[in-house]
Image 1 (spheres, helix red, strand yellow):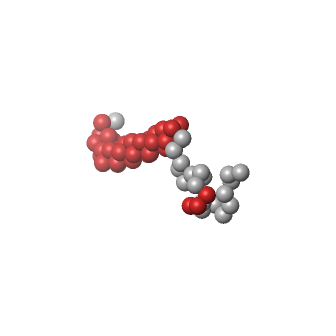
Image 2 (cartoon, rainbow, N blue to C red; image 1 turned 60 degrees about the vertical axis):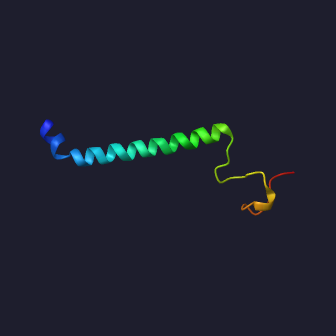
Image 3 (cartoon, rainbow, N blue to C red; image 1 turned 30 degrees about the vertical axis):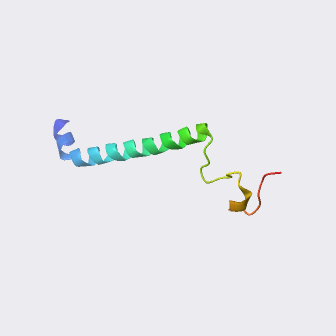
Length: 57
């Protein structure tokens, strides 16, 4: 078991780092959504609307 870990240490560390980065990105998106920050959708400013038609009435 320890031999396998030592042979694959670089791969294990790389995957761990990528998982941490993905987790932080997801956490940031969830936090922004809970705070009400726009994430590429409707910003409420019809002058800069990229969706074709403004949804505000």
